[in-house]
Amino acid sequence: MNVFFKPYPVPAWNQTPVELALEMRGQIAGRSLRQVDVRMNPYEINYPGKNSGGPFENATSAKLSIAFAVATTLAHGVPTFDLLLDFRNEKTMRVLEKIRLVPDPAVPRLCCGIRIHCEDDSVIDSYLAKTGADYSFDCDEVSRLVRGIGKETGVPDVAYDRLDDFVRKLPHGGEIQAVIDSFALMPKMIGA
Image (cartoon, rainbow, N blue to C red; front, side, top):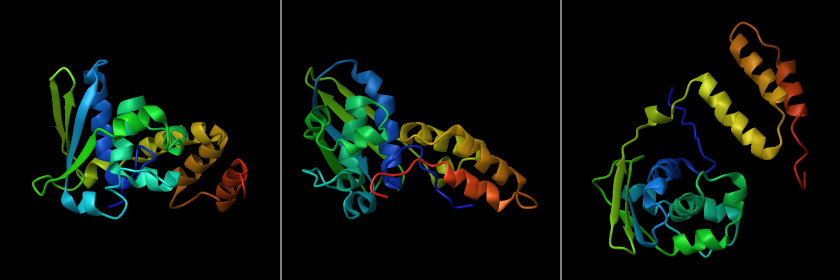
């Protein structure tokens, strides 16, 4: 019951900052940013790769970065696979330069505070408290999230239909062949 599901294609500790940045993005309303302070638990910020502000050598090092996840979200909205793979995107890099990670022991793990200082001297300040229970989704929500990723990566809905059918029949049914058939429908990955 301690499984943690990730609604966005970024590491677990980047989920809450992304969700909060999405909420705050609409409040920016076209204003120029001066500085973005992201307050999180020191353990999360100081975990290897999390506090990198770039430059990034590859998409993996970028996706690990809390600052990159927040910058991508503030610059573009929902961080999709394609956006996260574009770790040198100019719009993202302009926002990334303004992000400062603030280790704050008063912020529990999985929680985040963001304060956006705009060039017009206005400040947008928000905090999002989360626990592991907030990322424990039921089967329908997991299916919806996975299907969203499938749309980005070319996996046909029928593959998920078969997996869903298999899972719903557990523990007293479900044929493993349905899982095998489902994976047979996955697109061939480049280089595989």
